Every structure is written in C-alpha cells, then in structure tokens.
Image (cartoon, rainbow, N blue to C red; front, top):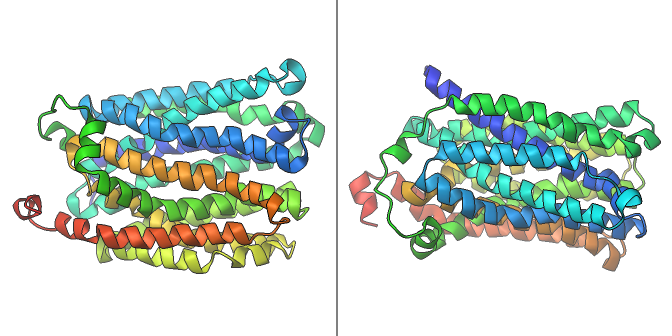
Length: 431
C-alpha cells in the first residue's frame, strides 16, 4: 500500500518531534540516576541522594497531567499543530537551561530549586506533546492503518532513549569521572537546542488534521470540563492501558540504573548497556506490533503484552543479580517486548475512545496520568523501598505485576468502546 507525500511528512514530523521531546526528557532521567545526587545533593547518603534526585525527576511527571490539560485545551480549541509548536519550544529552552544550572557547590540550595522549576517546565511540555503528536499521525492516517501510523508518535520514546543513553555512554567512555562530573554531563542538555530547531522547521510544514477541521463546533464549555463530564470512564481506561507498560519500562530503565550501580555495584557502562538494549528492542518491535494491531486487533496485542510483562516482573532481578552485562541486557530486553506490545498500539487504541472535539484533552490526560504514576511515582517508590526492604527487589516486582493486572482489567472494560469504534458511525453513536 502506497503512502502519500503528505502522510510521510506527517509521520516524520510526529516521530521527529516526539524523539526530540523524549531525548530531552531522558537525558534528565539518566543524569538523575548517575550524577545529580552527587552534584545537587552532596550532603545526603547515596540512597537518599538518589531518592532526592528522583524526586526532582518525578516533578516532571507530576507536571505532565497539567500540561495535558493546558495544551489539550488549545489543541482541541485552536488546533493540534499550533499546540505542538509551543510544546517543542518550551521543552527545548528548558532543557538547554538545565545544562547551564550551577551545582550545589556554587550556589547551594538554589541549585536543586532551579532544577525543580526547569523539570516542571519539561513536564508541562511533554504533557502536551504526546497527545498532539499521536493525533497528528492518527487523524491524518487512513482508518485501516491508524494503528500503524499512530506508532510514529510512539517511536519517539525508544529513539529518544537511545540518543540520550548513547550520548551519556560516549561521554562516560571518553571522559574521566572528574571531567564528567565537572562539565561532561552538561553537553547532552546544551546540544539539544540544535535538535529543537530542526524539529521546529519540520513541524511547521505539516497541515492541520482533517478530524480537527471537520469535528463538531466547539462549545463554550472548557474541553477539560466537557471531558470529565462525558468521558471520565474513557480517561480511566486509557490510563490503565498505559500504566502497566510505563511502570515496567521505568523499572527496567531508570530504576535499573540506580539499583544496579548503587546496590549491586555494577559499573555505569554495564547499566547503560541495558538502557541501550531497551531502546533497540522497543524501536525494532514497535512497527511489528503496530502492524499486528491493524491486522488482529489492538486489544489483543495489548493483552498479550500485559500478560507477558506480568509474568516477567521478577526474572529480571534474578538476572541483574548475576552481575553479568549479558544477563542484565537479556533481563531488560525480554521485559521490553511486553512493554512495546502495549505501547505500540496504545495511541490508536486510546484515541478511538474519545470524540474529536475532546480527543486531545482526553487521551493526553489518560497518558500523562499513567506517566505520572508509572514513570514518576514508581521509580520514587522503588528507590525508597530499597531502604525499608533491606535492598530487596520484591516490592518493585510486586508493583510492576499489580499495574500490569490493572491494564488487563481496564482493557476488558474498554472492549465495548473498541467494538463500538468498529461499527458504522450511526450505530456507534447510539451506544
């Protein structure tokens, strides 16, 4: 099946924009796990320092639902494209400024405060980015290929992670520990401004989506109010679709970095290799699962991924405990198969739950609430649990399994909505 030049531009704009956004978000994540505890919380113990660094990192996830509401409002009122341009600029500027923040040694407690403010801006930007980028692809795509093209927004996560981790891996391998702590960690943040300029140019050339232009007239009721009144069940279902994969993803990447280096004594290069494997596995399988979603059904792919992830909640920690880089990569790589299955088709699945006039707000809020829980609170809880569990992994594995079980429950609840989306419009509207 051929793809039109316009659809190729849309897919590129969606993938490139989210890749840049996630690169910016993940370099902060990686720096939090590797050096922020030393540079911004030097007076705390190693575990407390990592916990405090993750707390500033979690602020970004707490800000994401707010970004979903703010940019969802503009995306549903004035258009997907205009909202996306602002999210890209906000993220780029905030990330660049993180690279300029003085450390605790220079300005004391003002240093972590500045980190928190900039991380909040990052979270706001990501909160508005994903929903618009996903809709840019889904709403431009032919109906029978919406799952496949929805994956172009999803591919930004593994590409961003791969870019961020590769950048830190190169710096870690070429600089001494002293150089990396003194100035090397700043380079990934400063370089991001170049990527933002490229993404801005590409995104400005894309047309507004047909679904937005042809949707029902806007009411005087705010999109968030209208969404909470009429679609709160869909928001909960959408949250559930994403939260299991999010929890597993950040346990296998962000928490894994801190756990293996501080608790197991593995080297940074070994831990970073696990992150690279995670990004490669997710990128390699993203469009495979998305194509399966168009062919066999999005719900079936999500269910398979959630079951696989639930069964794999404990084994990665057995493999991490071997101290082998190979087995660490196997533990992460296998875990990312289930994560990718749920994530790849999630954009198209959740988009179908909402009417076009509140779709940006509804799906953004679902996704970002799931991100705040699975990506923000889970690493924070996981790190804190190391203290009261004596460094044991069982609380982390249990939380991952519980969230995957919640995904399966929400999938069952949302099945009726998926069936309704496949009916003729008049019949579905009557449900």
